[in-house]
Image 1 (cartoon, rainbow, N blue to C red):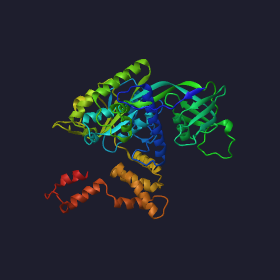
Image 2 (image 1 turned 45 degrees about the horizontal axis):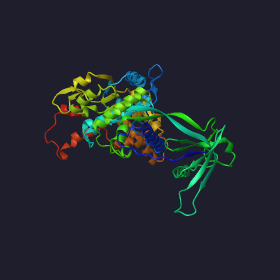
Image 3 (image 1 turned 45 degrees about the vertical axis):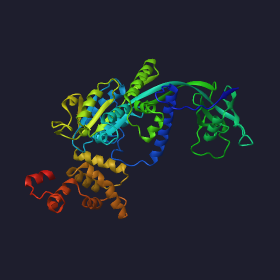
Image 4 (image 1 turned 60 degrees about the vertical axis):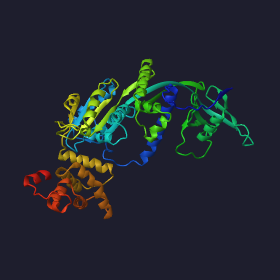
Length: 492
């Protein structure tokens, strides 16, 4: 007879046991998976929720319309080359700048890169203004963002007991104050059958998982964690009806006790937080990570380097995307210069819609509001304004994403509005026009619905004209006359 007892592990600062980290990683993976399942049911339609990838073929040639991407052929082709470099994992410390006018798809390209990378490659996204509103220093916030974009694939061999449950026998004491419950668990494979003695914690885990005779389970010997793999095919006729969530599996073959290689994917930031304090594991979910000492990170980097040499771990360079990068100041730019030289640096992708403007924190002007020494390190991808045909295709994709049925005439009118005002304004009118259509109890959005919401909601040009006409009636408005040339320039 063999005895299995449940184990309880606590996370201590700078406790680098591989098994502890793996258990933490496995728990985080489970929680993330359960959260993602729940969130898919209540998924909201966002500004870039229609983006599925970059829309490239195997030779990195962009399709005209694919995976939610339209137009921007040269920019998407350049982004595809960057994507291939990231997937190969051969480079570090490279930086890419997405530069273009507002509404030309810079963030969409960054989202396309994120979707194309898959789940294993870390992708961290922040806005430039976020760094000034956090309860920590700017450099600490940037360091944490960089560490979130560096993944670690940890390989571990664990002993697993895998078999079909023949019988679960639990002896409950008659008096509550008596000794703890004891029990026996009989497992079988295609070649052998074994009886295991159960401790109190294992009995509790079996009760939580609702393990019954006929279930196929796996028990991790290191942590005592029980996973229900499914129901045995031999028990498929036990009941006349089964729920849709019941999965039938074959009875495991060979020995009950096996060694399996388990791969966990975590980020360096998650390891930092777990080892930064006693209850660091909980801080991952509350978000209250605070500032992490440099000594902790140095020790983690040393340990990760050891694991890498031993073949236990593999570093996955990810991507960090900083939107509105012109909002960073000269201190942050200096930090980025230094951070990009680190051998464990991820790929940096930044975006801006500014032209020649002042570098924040100085009196000097520079292209895109970025210092020349950092610009010299950047591969610059420029985006171009969309054509009328491309705007029409984008609006068609958004109508499908927002589940709005629109007539051809209404789409043509909405395209004209997008050309004259802006693409974002035209996209905003889709749902508003659908609500106007519902109010008149219609099923298809017509031109009258577009006209109605166009008159209800002003775009930037009409709002500026209105302000120029009635500015004297607003509070704190300048009383001086505005030149005709200035007025034309503001409207344009």
